[in-house]
Figure 1 (tube, rainbow, N blue to C red):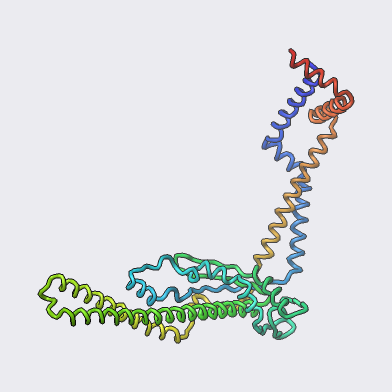
Figure 2: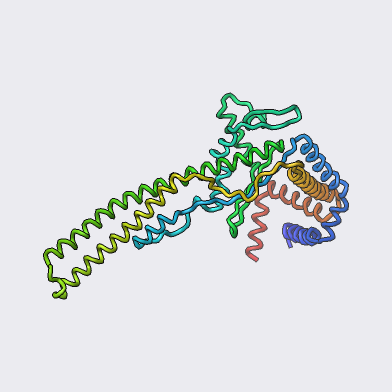
Length: 366
């Protein structure tokens, strides 16, 4: 057996022994217990850093809101589609609870909320101003301040939804109790305004469509009635002729269908005009925003827990690194022996590469 083969065999044996040791549960626990002080120290350090950071951050107060949206596709348009022999497939995406969850976090809606005037009681007294004032945002232009305030408000809003009941909820966090409640109310107000504008635009478009369809139906009805009148004037004895009687029935059916469609359109047009001018809230508030009394501790608790876990993980990594460095310093360990042999063989291959080639040819010929 050549010297290289011997080194490879010893190295493979060292790897197998090492793998068995590394995969042993007791070996893993031994490393943790041996370096327990380091792990505990890093965990405490991570916890202390997060505690100090949480103490420096302002406290936040949260308030929650639950609501459902009114509206949806109107029955008038659905009735017209039924009269025309059509069916409207699918639901209105602007009435889904996912739509309202996304709408609550859109930049345009948040910018409108940031522009509102707020009156908040602080430790220094009553402060009045827009949302950038309470966030401490100062920029060159008012629009930039509003954009920055909207970006800061977005992560402070969390949304929930219950598909079975169609109830949408959101929670707002703010540095002051009054501010949290007022921001939540303004979010509801902007949602209602948006919903009312969209609903009014939809009703206006529906009324316009029905009005155009009424004109077409009126013209079609007049044409059908003229056809029936002309037929009966030219064929006064149509009852005695089977073919003429069938033609009369066909024209009569056309007139009846046109009359029914025109009547439905007229009723739908009246309803659309009434709905277009009707004003009212488009959101049903299930749970209004209340004034929070105690600060929300979830943010600080979560950060402290994450800091403890991160510190503990760092301590475990340090423990295993120290364990490996300590083992490499041991002269008689299998890993150290394999390392020294491989290093010596590598240097020998670099100095005399033809020797390695000769040994390979000998093994091939054998």
